[in-house]
Amino acid sequence: MIIALVSLLPLLQQNHDRSPLPPSLERVLNKVATRIQQQPQLLESKNLQRLHRGRDHNGGPIRLYLTDDEGKVLNSKRVSRGFRRFQLMAEEANQPISHQFRDELIFGPYTFDVNGKNYQLFGRLPDNHPRPWFFFFADNKLLTAGLAILLSGFLCGLLAWYLGKPLRSLKLSANALARGDLANRVDAATASRRDEMGQLAVAFNGMADAIETMVNNQQRLMGDISHELRTPLTRLQLSLALARKKGQHSTELDRIEYEALQQEALISELLTLSRVRLNATEKRLTAELTETLSQVLDDAEFEAEQQGKQLHINIDESICFEHLPKTLSRAIENLLRNAIRYAEENVYIESKQTKHRVSIVVKDDGPGLAEEELDAIFTPFYRPDSSRDRESGGWGLGLAITQAAIYAHNGQIAATNQQPHGLVVTIDLPTQLSTL
Image 1 (cartoon, one colour):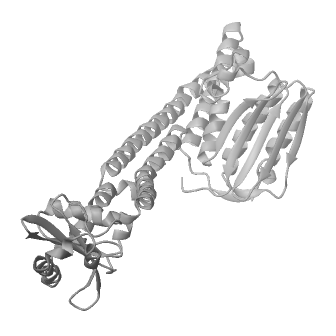
Image 2: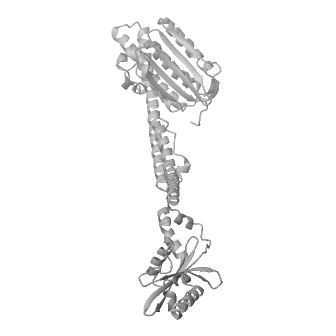
Image 3: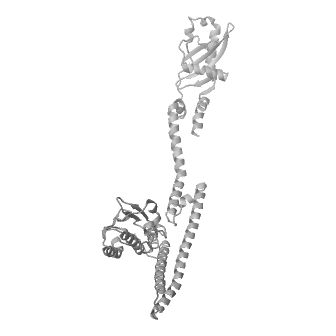
């Protein structure tokens, strides 16, 4: 559009400045031509200068140009560039015209003959009529090109912003969905657009609804199955207790009792994971972090002491924010137990609070993990190669429960290795919980 407007400026200017020769100016040229026809001696070189100046119909000064049939100016040696341009315009128009230049009006030609030779007469008036403001751009082409580039860049920037804003919203929602925030949706402003972006946002929200429903149903199914498994397991344990009471003892019964206890622990972990992922009915509270973790830290200190290790606690007692106490306690408990299990001598837990975030860091001086395992450890039933045995590695649900608990707070959790060795787990939590 801008290129088209700039291209039309010369045509608009030409149509505005060029017009047929007015009768008043034609009479001026006719009067001079008649005089030359009546006095042919004026065409002699010594008299031509007398034809250089004249008066218009209002008595104002006028400059005259007399040309032969080849277009050569006879009565002046200095001819302006504007006059040469006007000669070409008049030749193209093939009729007498007038044209308004920036500070002069040139008109003609008036054709006449003297002694069988054709002559043309032109006039020039010092005239400066106001023109529309946009003709300024036609006279200043470099400035016009620069302004056109700036305006085009501004319009393209607006267009890019208009198209990029819904894409950014879709990207944020997709990333949130990938992190496990199944309740996240594209904002209503994007979804209500009536273009393809709006249709894409509606389709994305529909997909997110279906995924959330499917995952929640899966979690409920896991919880229901785990709960139902407890009934035959309880009967099995009751039967074992009755057999013990009757004095029945054997290696097989001991093995059955051990496996039953393992199954009970596994089912308990599965139920905990299901409840945390479904954000079951725990009440949100605004409480101090030290108060929430008091019992967990006491138990962790005792456990570390029993293993000949030391737990270093650096948590500011002023840290207070909205959270789910039991859920957060379980998450930190799992992290501390893992850190104590694999640490050589020292385990550290520290926390700090900013205006809108709370950061909790748990680190140990153990062997750390392979880089490819740093994300996988939060996957249910995943156990690193160093933790394959049941006694030390469990079922691989502890860190999955921790991750689900942090996601229930709309937070983030990540594991990294530290130098020279050891594992660092960083938790980042918002100070205010949104509606879950």
